[in-house]
Image 1 (cartoon, rainbow over the protein chains, first blue to last red):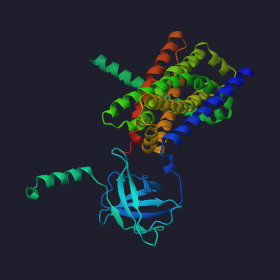
Image 2 (image 1 turned 90 degrees about the horizontal axis):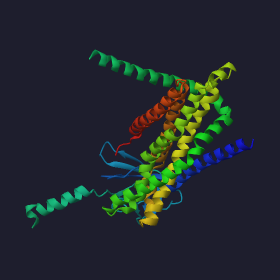
Image 3 (image 1 turned 60 degrees about the vertical axis):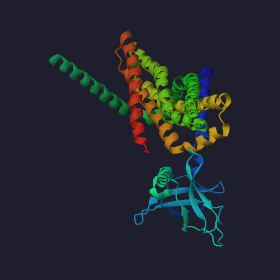
Length: 156
Length: 261
């Protein structure tokens, strides 16, 4: 009897340890906070080029996360990328003339959307569209522009 | 020439026969799984001997694999002055490949062999025949609990291996090499995806590998030649076949979950 109890206790401890390890991996080492429903409202913005933006990237104002990217689609008419943003419910008063730009955190970091608040008295609400957007900087285009300017005959 | 062809024909035929028999055995095991789960005491006992007893091996292996990963990724990333990405490098390589595969290979060596030789010896000493005489189905009483225990233990061991590996990498790169602690964890949180890396890779691979190894182990044991040589051959085949099965399944699962760049 005593031996079966030892076996059962250590088996239970082993299983609990396994699940604790899973919880540790999920909460401490992954982007778990971007999952789950935080409530709030969705707005959309269209960009010429989104660079490497991915769904669930964060949306920030002054570096503070206020939402996340829900979905990215291509508008078949004008070939712009339409990005659906979810803004958390606690941020109701974002002016509707704010600018959305795609930024990169650090040189190897990933891309996110930064909102620069405008001065309007009316606010973004569910379903509204952000008018002013700034596309991602694509390094290759930038370098290409630099070289074509430097080598163009009229550049001097 | 003809004899060579004939030899190859028999080798292929033998492989197909073993493959098919293994699948039939799997369906037989799955049919008894619900009733075996009700007799949880038997399963618990097997989880103890298969899983809990492998814990020390997994912890020591995980610690050293994590530390080696820390050293290697630090070495590589220091050339690009990107040592802040050490944490996400360790985590991604552990969760996606090294964790599930190394755990599965260690499990095959530590527990798969034990399963095969135990069941094979029961066959050789006619204990299985004795059970049948008493109208106890040895597949239900002996084989199914061991199969379930293996399929439950391997994902748990994999997750523990990954956790210890992360802690080992943390110890080495943050405490010893001086990588910034905040960057270590925050880069990891940005780059590791919960569903794509932890659930799809670590956990699902663990369950599939665990099921495959325990199936091969109990199959080889159950159909072992009832002699000393037969049991030892069956044990060897368990290790070889499980290692190959794990590596092939790993490729299949990785390509199935591959999301593209």
